Length: 210
Ligand code: 3PG
Image (cartoon, rainbow, N blue to C red; front, top):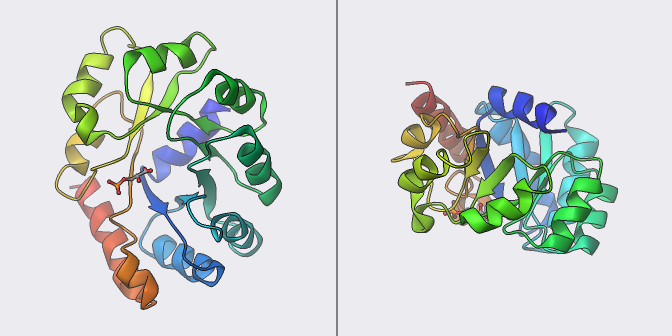
């Protein structure tokens, strides 16, 4: 499961973290991000539009990889699988959720902010984690420190990642991708400024490969 996710992220290592206000935004937004070079998206369950949004992206855009984010409970995990999510992201880790995530058929990125949380997943066999909230949990320095004891683990930092620091994060050997909300500003979504979103995606890709 981990290698599929590694493969997707190696092609598209910047993951927009999306909160949909309405399900109608899902497909045009995903198209706009894809047009800007981003093919792996995380749609969160922070609003009721999240779940049907995942469903409609899956049904409409076969080239986009859509994962579910902000999965907090086993019930939500089941719901996102039914909706067709292709990977699952949680903001944090509990033994119950980790075990359900491991037994699901989907690639997973459980959230951790400390070594103890990482070790909970590590002892269950996990080696890929979301590092959240990255900037206030130590950011780049913390990830460098994790690479000592957890040398075989890789991370997707989110929370405070921006155009100003994404290249530094992506330059770390234990970072497989970065994520964040800066690519999908609420005002651009509300005004359906899809070209603004494509431009944000393009400039993030350009920064990553600069
Ligand atoms: C997430 O869940 O990944 C975060 O909400 C992203 O945080 P950001 O708004 O700082 O990008």
